[in-house]
Length: 409
Image 1 (tube, helix red, strand yellow):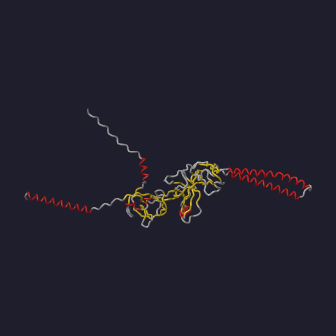
Image 2: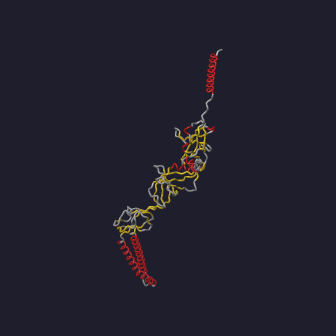
Image 3: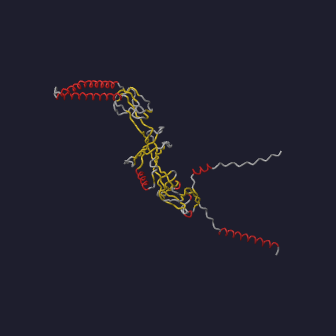
């Protein structure tokens, strides 16, 4: 066998071995099984019962604690206005001075009539005393004595009438000074000096409002009231501290710093709206609240003892509008639940039914999973909690720089 034949034989053997190795590799690759994808990571909240203070936010309007319309009780010409519009006035302060001339004259005339009546009593009284002695001696008839006694009583009655006339004249004279019936802030004046006013006129001269306390009247539906009473009767909710505290949110969204109290609830439901009025009282020492302002009152309803709360992003809706949630169940598999929620409590839903203590509700990653798949659950951390944890960690210190090598001279 020559050298060329041996070289061709070795080349053919190499080609055959390479083909066999390639075929074996393809067969091994075809036989090797595919690896399953890792389970999807989701964030869950493990439900635990807790006490929750339930509140209701209702719209309302403010009104003054006391309102008094100032009107004259006698007629006359306004001589002077004795207050500044928009200022604070005190009870009993003189606001207007009416022309008192005619009332002073009437008062003087009434006093003169009283003096005349009192003077006419004296001779009749003396005559009655003399007749009393004479009738005992049968010097005068009994009829004459009775007539004189009647004249004395008539004169004394005329004195009483004159006294009443004096008091009336004195009161009318005092009414020429129009005084403030209550303390508070007075509004604009509807009359000026020289205006003619009449007793008990329809239009008020001005209006005083007491603003150190204000009423806030809000409306609540009768259905919500019945639901609240049923919850308290069943024991799901307890009244907090035996009284209802009220907070206030102003029209610009800022909270009012002072708390109010529930004054009363109306006993009649409005037939047109199905609601009733709730009146609350708020202290107003700085007079931030003015009558007619739109506000929102936050009423404490009570405390739910075993409430289950689910973050709002963990609750969806099906095609029928029912609330739904995804729960990590046995074997780390996703299970769908139809739940019933009643209200929001901050960023959470208050669950009435469909979930129970210990359930792990998926909050983040809901869009990436479906019922029946296996997931990897991790505890959900709210953004606010994460930011607080990051802020609590100390800032990273920069790495120490190596010392520079000495330069050769």
